Each structure stands twice: as C-alpha cells, then as structure tokens.
Length: 210
Length: 231
Image (cartoon, rainbow over all chains, first blue to last red):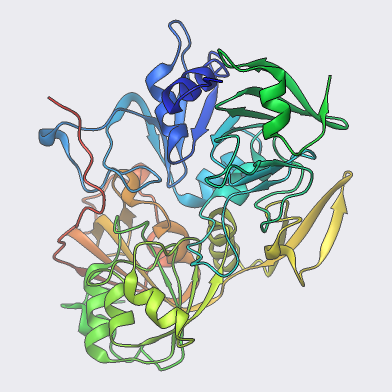
C-alpha cells in the first residue's frame, strides 16, 4: 500500500475546484491546495477575517502588517481583491455564497458529521470560523489522513469527539483515496495509486457502500 | 460636541469601571486598539469581560490585560497563541465562552443594531447549541444567539476625522466596524487623525455616529506569523 502524501492529497483536492467560484481553504494541508489549482480554472480564495482574492505570500519587501490571512500569516492582494468586515465575511459564508470549503478533520462519521475543534481533557483553543464554514458553505470537502497516529480509523460510524458540525461533510480525500458521504455510509470514489479495496476496508470503521 | 481626546488615558476617563463588558476590534494582532488596551492596563480596571475574536499574545494585545489579571472572562472564537491565557484558564482563574467566529461577529452586529437575538445554523448539533433555543425554518434547524450589548467598544482604524468617521485598511478592518457599533461608548484610535472634510464621504466605513471619542495613536503593528516567498 503506497497511498498519497500530503502534497498529492492537496493536488487531488485541487481537482474539486470549479472555474469561476469562491472558495475557502482551511489551515494546514488545505492551504497547499492553492499550489495545485488546475490550468484554466479561475477561483477566488476567501479569507474569513475579511478578504476575497487572496494572493501569494509576500516577498520581504511586500510585507504589510495590515494584510494577513485567517492563519494570521502575511499575504498579498490581487487586482480583484476586496476587503470587508468580519460580519460581512460571515454573511458570505453563512449565506451560502461560498461554493466550497476544504478543511482538515480529526474524525468524520458516515453521516457526514465532522469533528475538528476539541479533544476533551486537552487544551481547547477554539473553533475559529470552522463551525460557520461547515454550516454555511455549499459543499464541504475534508482532507485528512485515513487513520490516526495509533493506526485507528478516522472515518467512523459515529464521531467520538465533540462535533464541529452535524451532517455537513460531502467528500473526504484521504491518503487512501476519495470517498463520498452517501445514504447508508461511505462510497469509494477512487483509490490512491497502489491502494486496494482491502486496504481501504481495513482502515475504515464506517460502513462502505457501493 | 468634542470627540477628540489627547491620549488613550484621557479618552477612557470616566468610562472605565470594574466588571464592565468591553468589545474589542482586531483579528489576531492585526487591527487591534493597542493604545487603548495599554491604557486600560495602566488604569488597572478589574473583572473585565472582553468580547474579542482572540486574546492577543503574552506580551502584546489583550495579553497585557491577562498578565495583570484584569480579565474575568473572554468571549472569543480562538485563543491558541497565548500561554498566560492557558495558565489562568487551566487554574480556573479565567472563564472562556467560545463563540464561532461568525456568531461572534453577528452578535456584535446585532447588539449594535438593537437586535436582541438571531437564529443561525452555525453550531447546530454541537456543544455550542446546548441550552439554546432551537427553531425550524423552512425545514432546517437553527439556534438562537443573542446580541452583544457592551459597556465599552475599543477599535482601531487607519484614518479618522474629528467627527469620528473612520476608514480601515485592508484586513485590519476585521471585527472593528461591528465592535464599534455595539458599545454604549465607543472609543477609536487611528493612525491619522484628520480635520472634518478631509475624508471622502463615500469612502467612510464607520460613520461617526457610532464613535464617541477618538484619539491619534502610535502603532507598533506587530506581525504574528511573518510568512514570505522568495523574491
């Protein structure tokens, strides 16, 4: 079993981007998706602190303390960029104006429940905008490793961790392949190079349906 | 009606009270009212509840109020960058009410608009929804969230005029326009304080009606995550 590394997962997730849409990318591997936007696909990236049209990281000369992304990293603007308040930003998100959100997860259930913000007993930092994104964005794609560090499945019948959203995930892209949340469980859409259906079954607690 | 004050300390005069609810603009360390926070630290006001998306870092932003143990409770969406915060939180000395970021922004917007509450899908089926009214609209479930009615708003803008009109710059706008609306008293600090007439009326982000007092500040504008690409 080979499977995808984080860059290959991000590259596969970039295939989800549709031309002419507005997209929000989460922190971590989802941020890498912007490196693989396919030729001919024009998407506008939203940063939920209050910006549409996020450009690349700045050069040393371009750094501007007033210009950061939702991960608090310095970034740049583009010709199409607009700025707005956090209330307007979340009006875009909650109002269904953002087509796609790609974000990371600790657990996903076969009903599409998502857990990615707290582990009871451990330090809780907060949910940021994640609960708003999964509740309001039209399509939610998760990028995550298929199993945790102990080798336990992260695609579960029920999430064990507190939820970020209930029945919100449409598709999961893991190191093993692409999986859709459908009636009755998880449907295998495609498998990563060198990964067999038996590999997927062994790493998945959720019900697999064909 | 004089809105211009000579310093943050003077602008806060007669306003600060122990136990008050303060709404603060800013996202991370971007667009935070540095001067007003420092003046609240110097004033030593205690038992504050602070509604702000983040809690600053240990030695900057709202973190300086935590250092002085002036904050009783934070209403925030993310507090990850502050070790002192975590120490006080784990010791039970500091209360935290986590709000989803959009819920926090909308609570401030609602409070400023005289709206007591609103229904949102954000947080349905999560811990956030516990104890809140649920109501179905058009076949979907929403929860009731309440507006924030603060005693004091502190915000930071790029340019302001003597009438309190404000213009923000780039992503330093963030929570500032909504925070400005939801306080009984709003104090703004600006990088450039200009005479009335110097700002283009069509370009004003926050009309002066929301701003009671204004000062020119000095801004360090610290960067939290300096991230660059090769030239």
